[in-house]
Length: 336
Image (cartoon, rainbow, N blue to C red; front, side):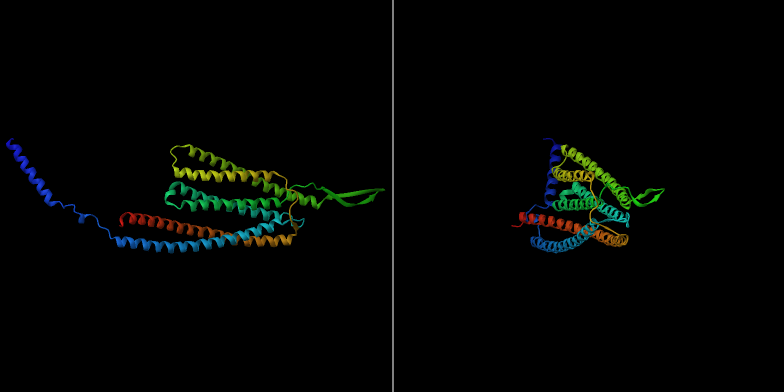
């Protein structure tokens, strides 16, 4: 053994000795210690916190349901009232105009519902693992239910406007004898004028609704095709596949309903339903509807804000529950 090797070995031995005496030994008492009692108490405190937030969530849900029921009751009343009247010779086209404004208002609500459900669906698509997935899916179904109800109300108002009728254009206006012959005078009948006005308004309404329904069908078919492509993609996760399958079922249901609406719009409606009203009563109903529309608009926006508040509270409860679940699992594993 060379002198240099012995010298190197001596220094290596000294170095290892110094490292050994300076490093702490890994004794049992030096392992991480947990305050188990504090951990147990944290579960108790978090459970109480969740109970408090869930009580608040239940209150928000109840408030939301009450306002929603009030809105639906009022809308039903107005739609039924308008469906039971139509124009007379005196009111001309005022009732038809009122109905078309009501239809346009219902269509705006549908647009809002669709916008809200699209936001929910996108949230589920991006982050379903950290969201109350089942409850959000129920929200989408609730918005779809409201959409279908509004469509049904629109169809009811459209049908009540009636359709073209065969009415004699001319009627007798009396006559006189001249040069030994009787000459009868004629004039355009008031019934023909009324039928003509109603036909113009109902045709305009039908064209607008047909255009809207056809656009809805094209949109649904496009969405259906896009989802089918996503489902064929092998990189689509299991969670997203479940979301898309649920949405595909909803689209099929909506498509069936829109095709039914299209067929219904193309069928003849016959005479307007309900009773003909005069100009003064039509004016009163117009004012009534204007006030009701303002009230409903305020309530509707309040409802959307209440939904946002409820959804935020629900998300908070979900996150707290997930946290509690994690803490309980940790205790089950470590608390002997």
